[in-house]
Length: 307
Image (cartoon, rainbow, N blue to C red; front, top):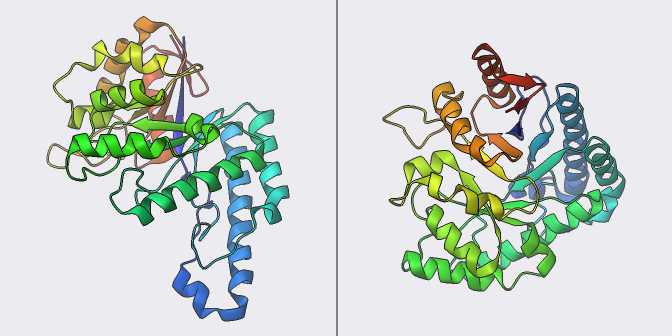
């Protein structure tokens, strides 16, 4: 059984960002040179992403979350961006991912809400799914979009119903890309399981969110079902609370005692699992965790735990 560790978007080791922004206000102020500046930012993001991926490869990190802001203003109705203009950059990134057998995914921004009662928000959410799907196709990769169920709407039951109904509006290829994640306040893991049974989608367990919002269940009773929603290797999100007072906030690092308890919990399934470490210190948190695991006697190869 192999447990691979990954991190999201930003590396502390490099002075690089694949999510540099250009606001629409600034874009408008630039007038005729707005598209030149936007092009400059996009190319910079691609180049930084390439460097980050190469850094990950050199440090044996095979699991990574892509920034959802590689192309700023991509969904803005008043900005016209032709993705094919950057096909060579997409191909270069995709070649690195495929050649090195990296697993990458993307988390949609929180203002994209599939179960929103605002139809404009739903339309923009469906549109961004199409955009990211096209980006993955240009990279020639199979990847995933991670979604929370969304807001409560009139009631939680109504929110679930709206999510299911709007999910069915998506093209089949996009439906297959989507992973749903339990959240820390409203939609617990049982809600995700019930939704999954209705629309046959994969579930990402966020263990920290589960600890915040248990829904009155023991997660050990549902791990097998959650993992079996994946045909391939399941993925899990893991973070530690910042403090007792700020329990929902993420800590800079991972609580090693809680992490090893979780490893004990999942090892009975004897299947490979990828764990996204959602700590504020990003890759530094991964490497600190690896050092602690080695000290405790775990077998580790690069950033993969062998159990």
